[in-house]
Image (cartoon, rainbow, N blue to C red):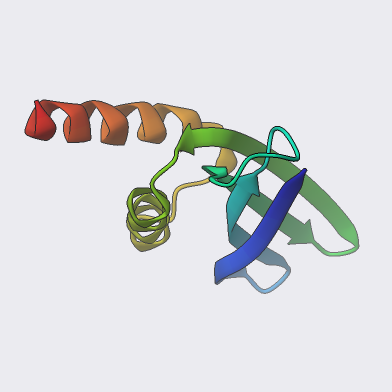
Length: 104
């Protein structure tokens, strides 16, 4: 079972008729009912509207780490840099590599 919690939203007015909204979610993934510690992940949803046309783009990485703190720090960095779904997996790879380099 997956549970998503909205952590932050960034909205930009690109022009008079174009708006971009990016939503950042913290995801808890309980793989089995007996799991006491969920795997933590990230979901990013990008909404782009131009006039009456709306495009939606989603990327989910449901199982990054058991560390809630680490994943929430990743989300904060993504919000700060306005990471969109298309770049999310690449950024996660960079952040996990950076963390493993510092820890070991």
